[in-house]
Amino acid sequence: MTDPLLSNRAVVFAYHSVGVRGIRVLLARGIRIDRVVTHHDNPGETIWFDSVADLCAEYGIPVLFDPDPETLLAQVTQIAPDFIFSFYYRHMLPATVLSQARRGAYNLHGSLLPKYRGRVPVNWAVLHGETETGVTLHEMTEKPDAGAIIAQTAVPILPDDTAHDVFAKLTVASEQTLWPAIPALLAGTAPRIVNDVSQGSYFSGRKPDDGRIDWRLPGQQVYNLHRAVAPPYPGAFTDQFGQRFVIKKARLTDAPKANLPQGLCVVDNVIFGQCGDQRVLKINELLCHGELIDAGQLQRLIDHA
Image (cartoon, rainbow, N blue to C red; front, top):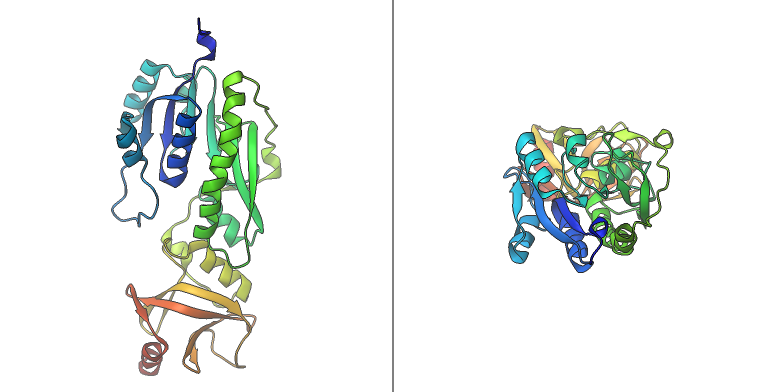
C-alpha cells in the first residue's frame, strides 16, 4: 500500500514560459496536477511567451483563471494538495493557501536569492549591470522570496544581453533546477539552505514610464536601461523634436565625433544617442509611433524642430 504521507498531488500556480516548462517537468516526474491557477492574458501586453492555459488544455488539466481570494482558498482546501508550486505566477499567495500544502509550497524565482527578491528580477539585474543571475527553487513563506533555498542554477549575463535574452536562459535554467530537485522533494530529503534576506535587496515592479532615458547619465547606464527594457518589453524611450522615440536595437560605442548634442543625433547617416560621458549608443533600429524610422527621417525631424 502506498504511504499516504508520500503522495504526490499538487496545485500549480503558473504563467509564462517558465510556467509551461515547470508544469512539463512536474508531469514528467510523476506529479499529479489536480489544478492549475493562471492569469488571463492582458490585451494591452505584448504576449511573446508560451501559454500555460494552452498547455493545460492539451493535457486536460483543470484551470482556474485569476480567482478571487475566497474561491481560491475554497478550491485549494477542497483539493488538499501535498504540494503547491508557483512558476512565474504574478501574485503573492496568502499564508492561508500556502498552509494547505501538506508537504510544502515551492516557488521558482528568477534570481540567485537572496539577491533581487521581489518583482521583475531579470530586468533589475540587467539594469544594474550584473554579469550573472540565475534561478532559485525555494520554499514559499508569507514574506516574499524569503523561504529556505532548495536549489539554484546560475546563468551569465553577457555585455550585450537584453532582459529578453537573459529570460530565455532562465527558462532553460528553471527546468534544469526543477528536474533534479523533484525526486528529493518527493522523498522528503531535499536540502533547506538558509535564505539570508539581509544579504540581498527587495525590488518592486517597473512601469513603462521607468524606461525614460536621461541622456545626462553615463553611456553604460543608458545602455543598461535599453537592455533591461528592450522589446518585447516596452523599450527605453526619449521625447525629442516633438516626438516620442523608442530604441529597439542599439550598441554602446565611443563617440564618433566630438561636441555632439546630448540625446538623439545623426552623423554620417547613422543614428546615435549621445550620453553624459561622451559615449554614445549606435542605434540600429529606432521606433517613432511604433514604426521604424531611418536616419534621413530623423534628420528631417531635427531640422524642423
